[in-house]
Image (cartoon, rainbow, N blue to C red):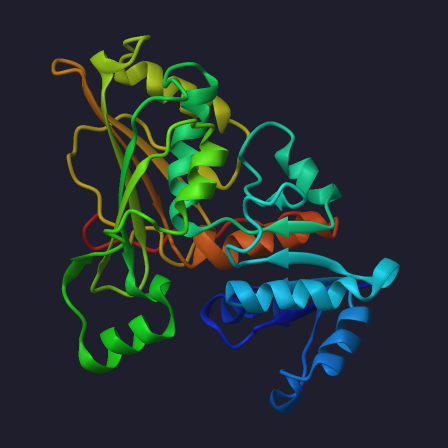
Length: 318
């Protein structure tokens, strides 16, 4: 019997991406409300009671309201996957990064409420958590995270600004150093010191690079680039959606190479002569950074087999 899903907020970028990925899936049936009833609490409550899982693709406050509505159903409440930031560091919700640590996919599968990760944190946590767990980066080490994303990650206003009016070629933002992704990045990376996070947006629709520079001789273990690579590769040896790239001296990475995929690609770029390294994560901010991760979590929560990953589109600058 097919599982049933209601996407609350299906008209947004993430909701559309999830719907597109699930539309042709025979073991899932998508349920919807007519556009004129999407704000009707009774209609939304009724459809929640009739499905196995609700996906929330809403702003934080609206997501909280939807959860409160689901709570009124008591034992008849569906499982919930929330794509907002509302519950990502909430102790009663399971964090939906299946590759976070051994057993995390099983925790997601057993959970009734799962918070989908942010796009930037997916890259940063994917790089940092294995190194903190391995003792190569102390939990209190000062970390700086730089990142660039395509403009689709900025929501409707930013998308319209770039596609209708032409946005800037590149801009830094979040320079108050209060970006909403910092708490989950710190918590799930295993850091006790708040990292500095400097995001930016480029004039391209989708794609993302997250980079973390390191002075290797400032780390107590004084690891080499090979040590960092080995620890990250060991963590993801059995993770089909995470690719740890072989060491490279090409000196060039562009953000769009994984567009159209649900894959996370991790790089360790090191110069051992100078004791420097840069950790880099590459992903599609609409794939593993949003809708692709949501579908991965949906299938875990519903006990469905994982989908096969699609190949990356060929990049013009890879």
